[in-house]
Length: 259
Image (cartoon, rainbow, N blue to C red; front, side, top):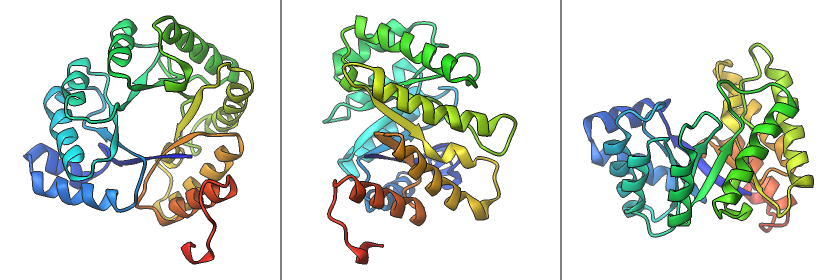
């Protein structure tokens, strides 16, 4: 399973304070601690709406590339920011994300095609659909458009969109996320990667249960064939769950000492 660190996001107050003040040393310290957890990628988020990303995202990307050498997942819908950030990278990134709400998807596809990047396709159209059928319809349409732009499935990551379990129709969403992974793994040819932002399930939940909730959900999604997980790599329970998943899949050698 591919591990993508979520820690550089807008909910990280220390990171956002350092970003706002351009405190390079503080960002370097945060990034170094993330790198010690050895994720496969680091997700880089500077805003929720793309505002200011053309300055902030390249700034953070350059730091991560220089300090860690880790691959990155560029979390922005700001095309200018994505283009600038890619110039700092040795390896192609994953771009997070494209949904049915994007007005100019061809621009994203062209950037992905030229750069060799991966692309997360998210089941989102206005809001996150509740039903399995609606999720699949959005993803199938995005996959078809990506393929028509000569982007192969091996570089695509289908995201069924995770919402927090504690509110509204959260539990119905969770069941459909799992079912969506199963259908995608069984029906899409050539195979496509599946991905989920695990921590979204515990948003707004009491802090004392979030770690257990996230780790359990990760294991549940792994059973449905999840290929990549965006997670808090500083969460010990989540990291133990990831280690067990990799051991059960024979991706690493199992050792009781590592638990």
